[in-house]
Image (cartoon, rainbow, N blue to C red):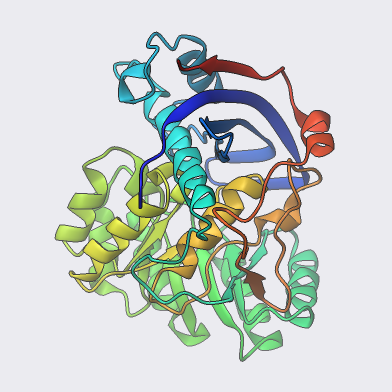
Length: 367
């Protein structure tokens, strides 16, 4: 794709609220604080990106670190040199800029982001329904509602309760929904001993896969669980701890699947590049969001649309958002439509952004 000349860079922080608390082993999510990034060329063509740091995934970097990077831009030339890569938040700030730049390029040349990429472009992609592990009755009600609305794959968060309690929840979900694909997300909560026990006890329940069963810092335990498990094992948090982790996980065949988050990896190109490389080692990949705004979700949808594996992706988090900066992409009957316009196919809405923005726009004009 042809290059564009960046004329203006803008950024603005925002906060989105979830409809209910979402709990995992590394904490409770009540809201998502992020930064919207805009890049315009000399013709006024504008592209968008965003960054919503999750310190548990981003090496401790928080939104304040990223804002600090933007506020201290020292270069009058757009590029890597704008940011101080000796400090936290720099890579996340640059990732958001790369996303906005990719969107602007695609808009300028009237190309949707998912076209022209390696993979199998489609009109929609399957997504899993997300189950918070609440009380047993609440979880079963939620599962029933998701199945009724058309989901054929459910993802259940587990690991916060005793293993036997989680197993009972899984048993009852499977009894109620015998034909539904069921995947589990442990978020690294299990010890090695618990994980070894769990993968054996879970065999009767036809589990599609288990995400991050052990501590993301402990790759040896992850590989050990994978070696004994007849259920496919996926790496999630472990990929993002540092730049060498994904390489180590793939080369050692420590898992069957990678859970790819374009917002953390740096965009579509990087996500697809990692997926294509992992596939050479017979490791599949699917895409999930990080409770992003509509901009981030749309980026993830385009990335998912270009991956060859036909599994459901984790793209339904928009259902948990009370507010947004654009029209939130939502699934219908377990599928989410790929935005069809140029670039992301979606743009921020002024009135929506004003309601959730926490500071004014700041900008740099390049001569």
